[in-house]
Amino acid sequence: MTSSSSTTRGRIHSFESCGAVDGPGIRFIVFTQGCLLRCQYCHNRDTWDLHKGREISVDEILKEALCYRHFMNASGGGITVSGGEPMLQPEFVRNLFIAAKAEGIHTCLDTNGVMRKRMPLIDEVLDVTDLVMLDLKQIDEPIHKILVGAPNRHILDFARHLHERGQKTRIRYVIVPGFTDDEPSAHRLGQFIAGMDNIETVELIPYHELGRHKWESLGHGYPLEGVKPPPRETIERIASIIHAYDHATM
Image (cartoon, rainbow, N blue to C red; front, top):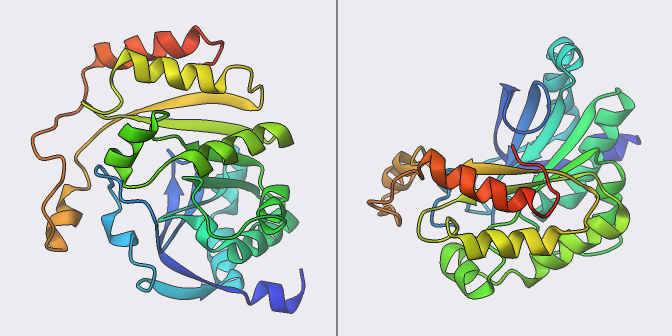
């Protein structure tokens, strides 16, 4: 990696040294600042503003991450870039992943698929990405617009592109009562990813209220007031539907 690449700066919210839920093994997780979606259940509400956070260089991030190399290597972990939305800063993600792979570190991109820049830059990021975790909020576009404030056609196009590339991908699907906990929505998801053999698993994530305090601390009302996490039976029912389309769930 050239000196100019290693000094590339990105705007981040924070990082987590030993994450265990954002990719395989123990992960060093970089949470980027800025997001264009407005998910009603967002648990990182404080990452939306594109101009907040702090700037940091690839070199600085990598130096910090390498302190945990032993834990990452021992667990089959690596570096995950999440957000916010990391693909709003693709040059930064690309150069960070180039640096990580030069050190033999596994790279994982956690994205909602919403980005401003297109090819070939996006493929340059994917070329140095070992695993993509793609959030598919809802396949039905009208419901998607209500839930996250934007259409989903570009997200679905990105999912198709990942399949065309044969990019190893894990789908993340949040089960939100009243929005994504119904059987028709699960069938739409299963039908959309049927035949996408690049998808290694579908991660079903029960809705939770852990981000409520962030909304309140920023002076905003919590959009899903009164909505409770889905029962286990709901998760199991959706998992069985996804399984019917030959995709494993976790």
